[in-house]
Image 1 (spheres, one colour):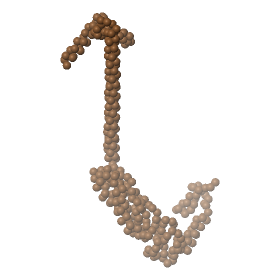
Image 2 (cartoon, rainbow, N blue to C red):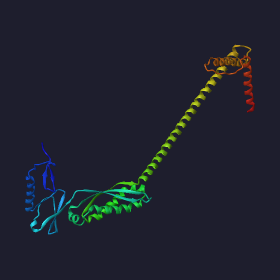
Image 3 (cartoon, rainbow, N blue to C red):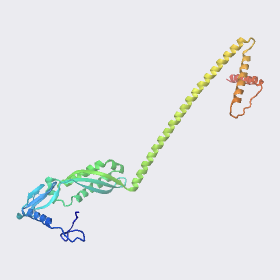
Image 4 (cartoon, one colour):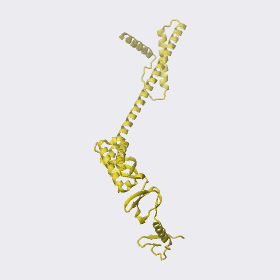
Length: 322
């Protein structure tokens, strides 16, 4: 079973927990120190990939060392002052400012930058804290751009703001040996109360649109229903008219046939007979229905003549009025 050792830097030794009594052999540690010492004696220096070394002689800059193994003779005062990474780095900057319509917002900008290999000496010697320098320029540009825009316009012109920040950074950081790869405005965060109010406005607008759509749908339904009822009444009227026309035609044929077959009868006698027949048919239908309804009608056969006389009088009076 393998055991894990912990290195205690203060004591410069390896121990196995608090209760360990046996210490591991120092052969590997001594070997590492020996290799380092030999490399230093041979003046060999290793520069890792994606980094460059800054070589000095007696404290004065001499050259930039590319990745790989280099001979740096310390005997003549040469040394590697430090290393500079060429990898792409990212800096997120949060800047609070105010819009034209007096809304405080927090703008989050993401800056991607890296040191330029051909200007590595400038990046190493001219600027000690590139992050702080970039942050200062971002603050300056954002606080000069956002107050000119209203809140809605600030959201719409995020790309223009990012382009302005990038142009300013490129001009400023190029002199220090840094390249600005890309600048993004990743977020614009208004105050929480403002966001809540914006959400309420949006919700109210959507409710208003929904109400309009609902009213329009109800309007269409009512129009279609009215059109359907009008069409139904029109067709019903056509049916009634045709029914009455058929009745009139039947009555005419009946009157003509009855007058021709029975000598001495007039059209009035035939109409009285028809009214009497319809009277009894109506009484039959009223009596055969299952609904309990009360209708008061003259029940004597002589009432038919009275009804016919009233109908004729009414028709004559209407004709005279016209």
